[in-house]
Image (cartoon, rainbow, N blue to C red; front, top):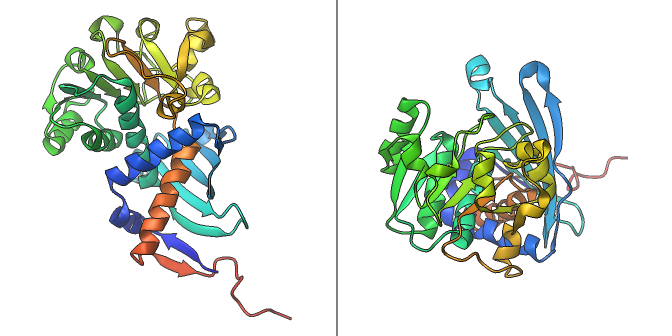
Length: 325
């Protein structure tokens, strides 16, 4: 048996936003029906290098796997390396054989953008006229691309604290650069920043709008004011991750937001276990990033690569090597 090795270039060849959105939607549905297994995300702090590692195992149907991913805030400046890098190992749960080892960096960006679009599909009003992208770094591009899979004809509004970053995103995505307040007033708002100070205020949010809070993925991070959470129907991806490191983690720790104020999980809505919110409801999706999203997309990438004979197959574990006496 051989293990398929997929480089970043290989993953790029077979990955589309349509593939990612479909895989992530399947993952949420399975999670909502209780068909997935996902132990809590494990953090390994690397404080002396201003970073951390995260181990994310999961099993969904005929696939199991683990992502080993870092977040090192100073990587660009110190080493010329990406802030986030990841490797994914995909296994067959029946016999534990490693089916594939692949770049997980693009996988992470794709599944995160897809999660926002799936949330918008189920929690936002139909046919949004405007979508605001606050934080126009790498993640904004996959959020934009994923929303193009789900919706047609919306105007993209871009805002970033770095004007040049917003301009670059606007040029590539066909967006219009606007103020923070205007971006926050869109029909759908996607925040993707590393902020530890809430910047999106309730009075800017339109009634019936939907917010994808994508940036908070570690303790202490927060993009939305507590009042913004209070005025909306809040949906999470996972209770343990959300309270520990999601958008609600700081208000939850401070006693400004309680578990009882959470309406439900996105998986429950996708699976049909919980109804879609009424169109006039202002909604928030607190996205922390789930390991089941990774394993579902990794399987889709693996199957697409196998069907097109992309990647390199190697005898990683030596199971095909002659026996040694």
